[in-house]
Image: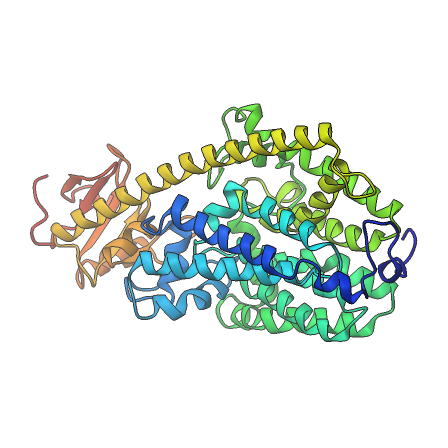
Length: 495
């Protein structure tokens, strides 16, 4: 590794003071980081809005601890971290608005702590701009207040890598490594492994046993429940991993870069990922990001502080590998950990491009960068607005269908199967059941048997044929779908 670890302690140019310098530590304080985190929280509350209903995956996580509906089927790839995260609110309140505000505030705090872990490695202004770059992505703003794991893997990884780099100077930061890795493994154990791979390599090369122990401790503390559950509910760890691969379409060498590009236009899940690519303006930042990361690495090498930029870039690369080359579909949230880890080296590159070694602005470069960033920000929020509008429409349709189900007599305790049954069942207060597909948790005979104990309904697309056992059931159109109600349900309405 160029210039060795000693570069961390001595610095290399006039713009990179010594890590050990107390003056550098105090310069600027933490208020710029707090301001970025506060603005991020505010953006979520204003632009995404607390009234946004729960999405499909959110209903699965929230139902595990909530009172709105029975727990939905929990497939092998999922982990319990999100459910535990929302439990302080969801365990006693069904208010989506309260849950959104809670998660928005918590996500802002998480971003602040993750950025603060990097103090002493980069100037505070670089950390603030890096945090702002990450926090201003439509993907980050949209998923920050959601009951989903990817944002928390991102801030956990960012904080863990920062603490890992600072632990060489001060071993107390190893506790931060444990906490950050634990958070990642708590949310998505497999993602935690991918993010920490370069850290294990660095610990091995540097013969840092304490760092390696901290990494292992974090993975064990966060992932032990997932492993235990693998043996109690899935037939063992290998069986759970195999089932997780099946649910995700079979993990193996695949090319999903173009799928991720298609998802940048606001598609929350691109599966199957077909159709044209979005407008070039929407994809431009994705092409520029690796170039700026490379510039940041070159600058770090020349400044004799290679390690502090190379390590997060390596972790970003390994975090992205499974979602670019091992999976056959895409969701923009999958790459949030990579974006978070790229943000600080990219911000460092921007400052070096826009300023002279003496710290003065380069007028032409600064103006061009300002124009580019302004355009980038505008595009992000156009996509965000469209994504929020689309998601709001879907969630309202689910709520309307649930209300129609309740009106027809399909009320708790009840069972729902078919098209979009998982989220609609949550809204209706029902159990969701599937006799086929990724969420299989019952047989067709089991569904028919349930009709003797509770109200049962099957959902299909408009005009779609229901399963054979429900072909004679009365059919009622709802918001974008048909409801097929078991005959024993009173008040089912016209056929």
